[in-house]
Image 1 (cartoon, rainbow, N blue to C red):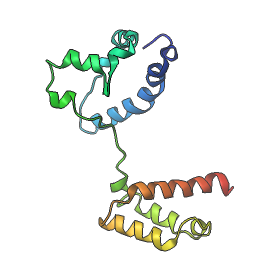
Image 2: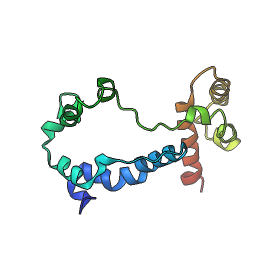
Image 3: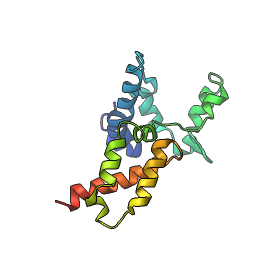
Length: 159
């Protein structure tokens, strides 16, 4: 690890926070769930210190990120791997609002306290929930926003 990760700007902040607190945790959970052991060789501190020393113009070329790295491994990996869009770790809220979080969403968003705020119309919220749960529509991003707005109100406004 860098001696002082924060001295490396955005990269350092990612190394000190985003990687250990988010990405590496998610990778560990995902691999352990399938009895796999994963390694991150690109996170070797010598390699990362070298990467941090490379000028930005070699890392970003037009809209191509990781330009020099992709050039270096182009003979080793198929183009489909190198050129694919970023994927990330998505939260399966679509499934969760149909299963594990279904009752929480209905109970919270159709509760009198929530509706009395006058921000949401009961019939619209009910329709979003029903259509999503039945599979007739994908309203999970909207449900997520409504639910967390209401939970924010309960936590910080309703005290």
